[in-house]
Image 1 (cartoon, rainbow, N blue to C red):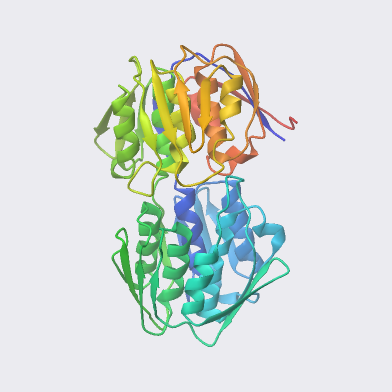
Image 2 (tube, rainbow, N blue to C red; image 1 turned 180 degrees about the horizontal axis):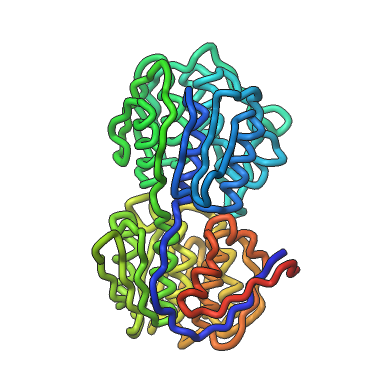
Length: 421
């Protein structure tokens, strides 16, 4: 396994260009199943998760090509299989997003129960109950979701708690349903809106994406399209913290400020100077003393769970006592003991971590446990006195495109060592 060797204590300076959003690209690529013609997607990040989902689509018989670095073309017209096998799905939860499109267009699907980061229970029961209400016959057998239907029908779907994947799966299924589907309690994330925009470009009729109620009028068919995926708001947030934790000055290009309002507000509370620039850019200046902060993760537009680990690393070097409360996932503090190995002073109390600020992290050998935990350790290492070794960075490669290269262009000293244990 690869590992990072990072020499810390260097202020990051310069410009960085944000990649396309992984969490937007995955459902958008899955939506190609619904199309009657070729689909061209641009601004697709080169990530392990993207490779996994294209392998899933290829296994179904769909033609996959990469004519340019961040472009993927998909021809769905030769789809011959309806099974997403365990060997692929086990590594990534988003693979379940082929279920809705397969049922809607081909009336059957066999999808392995999904895997992904070990950050707590993320059941798909809400997906399955909603699809059942829309006319699907679903059973669980030998680790697979076995689904069939005589035809997906429009229905009113009520999610008691917002589910991003559930909203996306049902929205895709509803585009080819008979009648109108109303999703109440829908997730509001920008990635949901991006999927809706892609589906609308294909000819779907969708209203309300980004709000708590989404209405989809079923169509008889959808066309191919050319579509550019939105920038990755979590990568934007991570680089905002990188500028702050290294007391640097970064211009983050290709960002959408409206997608990171909650993160920017918390960083501003800590004393970090953030300004919106022309041309879709954000500047972060971290040359300041950091104040403590209180953070609670909540669904969008609140503070995102995917930024909890990163802001915790920043809070570790603030002047005072901060509190970080995780309300989304019950097992997302596996980075806490690793940050403590680097000199952080943290106390876990149920869903809350109390953070006592220290002057600076110390280099150490640490191990990444999930995607965003990996990012927090990289951020701590950039701040640290001395050298940090981060093992199991394959988690990082699932969600950040060439993070080591981007950091090195900003002055960091990050070396990727191939084959580390």
